[in-house]
Image (cartoon, rainbow, N blue to C red):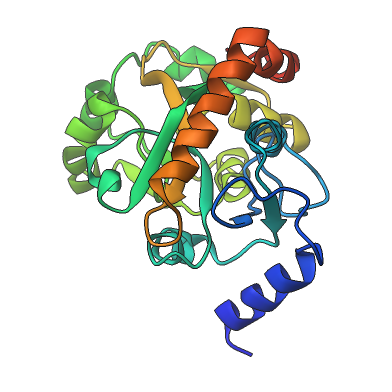
Length: 255
């Protein structure tokens, strides 16, 4: 069975027989992925983004289905084609607005650079991407995503210098850091700390300001309507006013 056919079947099996909510144009599907503590590959294990998205959809009177994980590198293409409807934790990048409807912000994302704590004596003075390039120190970075204008402006030069090594999932990146495959790792701060604790890797953040910015839910323009995003935005505004989203974020030390 082709990978996407299996995914569609899994979505069908995951969907309730009769939608409990129907205020949006349709029941909407997001896919699980390994991005802890925000998302987990097991749809039955709700990460922070699932909890926040469910609260928003419930407030909007809409139905959200969390379907099993799909191949990570195919996710953006499938979303743009409308083969699933919702993504979470997305930075507002102009190019994405051609195929995505952006919600109001619903949480903050902090991106940081980490080294193994044991390397602090030799690498603790690194304070910029340029310093990494000059010293030929390698850094593990996510293969996809937006990590701030400073990094984006230097990414090509760092790649040309052989400084960057890409990973597909955060657990791959952390295991490579643990094995000494690179000096540093750059990713969402909460995610790195979560996975490093899971793999027993002691890390320390470098004094490099990468990105600290709000993230959004996005809906596929190919499968949703303007009214759908308007309903979700109104729900986010009401929940923020009541402090309901903050109560969900607080245990994760996020704004």
